[in-house]
Image (cartoon, rainbow, N blue to C red; front, side):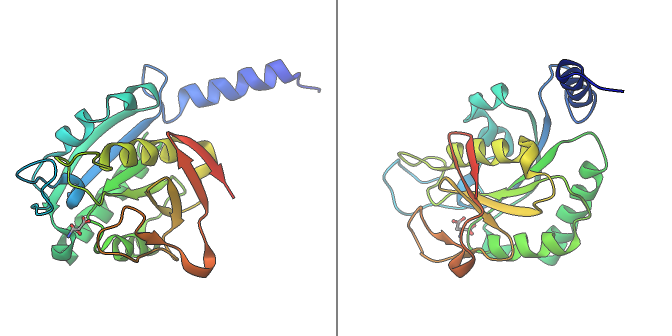
Length: 216
Ligand code: ASP
């Protein structure tokens, strides 16, 4: 039997509509916040000194109202620490929650995290998470109160990567500064620059600009 292109697209649309989507038709994404500079605050918008892990996941999501156009994002506060204080206990909580969410109707999971140990958490999750749904870590080099804070666009891009069907099966990724890195290659290379993440000889797996993804 020959299936017409229209019928195939209708079938595909039906599949999309019945799996991992919210009633409004947008994919469901869980944003698990752990702390870091992305949740940091400083006394003023140009103050270089700040405290990590000060604002809540609700505050982070409220700074990205554009998310409502690409996903139904729900936030959960797993911890609120500077990632130099990431612990085995938080790792295990995070991994267990990811397993639960991945087994439910969420299309993907985004984790906000401090940059100092993001590569370690990404690598850990790549070893223990049993899902082909995208798991995307993001963070920021500037605190949430800074002039031109990079957190909101990084969250937007991370969610865009998490909802993209091409991201399925790519494992754990790190998205910052318009770049998509694989968990096995990525490392932090600079103390303060927003372009701090690097994947060395392996290179990026893609780029994402205002949600527009190019996979290499
Ligand atoms: N010390 C901070 C942390 O890792 C640095 C950052 O998030 O960029 O939480």
